[in-house]
Image 1: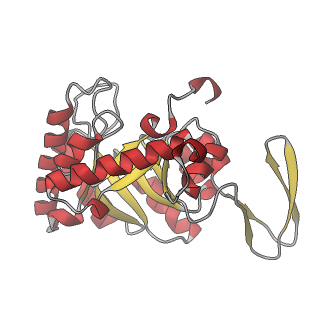
Image 2: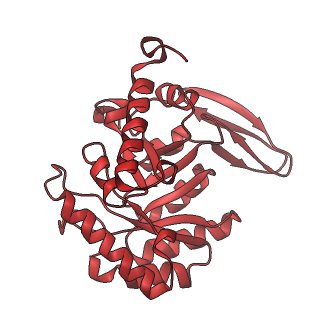
Length: 273
């Protein structure tokens, strides 16, 4: 094993997070392997993501579409043409033979998550620019669900796993369906969007974490209602809740997907976003 000083601060932090996740899962009586850690890498360079990847982690998340598509694989479609790919002030020629070609900035086996609200006019950019997008954490209305469904269908890719985002804190400035509407939106995704795979619910709590227990309890209650309406077992419906400041409590209250950024990667630099 590489010594902590040599492996980098982010990798050392990741190992600490994984240990804390394991202990929280054990306290909750949950198998640690059932809790997914999404390393949220927004505003962080590809080189830092690669360090964490090389340490064995495969699950990463991003919030901003334009930044996301610069980090993820770039896809080119064409027919017997040379295309020029502009990346970091360099033009890279790509020759195509009646097919598509990918230029991989980061390894293709990364499980990418998009986290948060997305405007419908950016769906094509996201789906086309991130062919290995595994999860969409942020379906907050039927319109975005429909756009995602059509986009996935047009690309001919496998169904995209999605979480319905619930506004559990009641903040008007925050995206997410009101808890009273979560069943209807989940039904829409599961029954009317054949190219999406309803996988669970997610929430983003108050920035200062003051409402953490109530947020988690509300999301758990929403899951019970959704599963009853859809005839699902609750263990088939994931809960994505918990970030750097509260992920241990989230796991103890049932989270299966925690989104951790600054605790792994350090403070974010939004000046370059």
